[in-house]
Image (cartoon, rainbow, N blue to C red):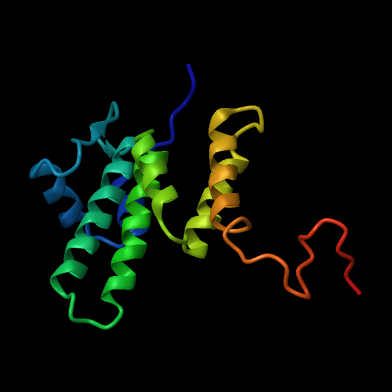
Length: 161
């Protein structure tokens, strides 16, 4: 049996910058799954808990931004959060909708591109997920760039000085 990564409440609190009382309250309110217990009845959390907390934190940030739309950069922040939510759906929930949402974006933030490439490195080039990620990054970075400038080294046969 393969061992699964586990975290104690203090680890989770540090990871997300929340207090233990907040963590336990979210658990009690059903916002995250109940923690598991070891043989000594100490709480521990798994990757499923981390995914649920990540989603909860992203949703809370998005809701907060939508309430403060009058801020000059609120729309940009909301766009970036929407990309993070799509990335979450694609990676943690295995939903193709997350992939399609990312592919519909006009451009991807550098942070999202970085996270996509990190995920691609965790897979073999023969895997479909690897090809999907690399195709998405290519289409949103290289393919979307204007071609033909004097310093464009991507053109076949173009030499750099």
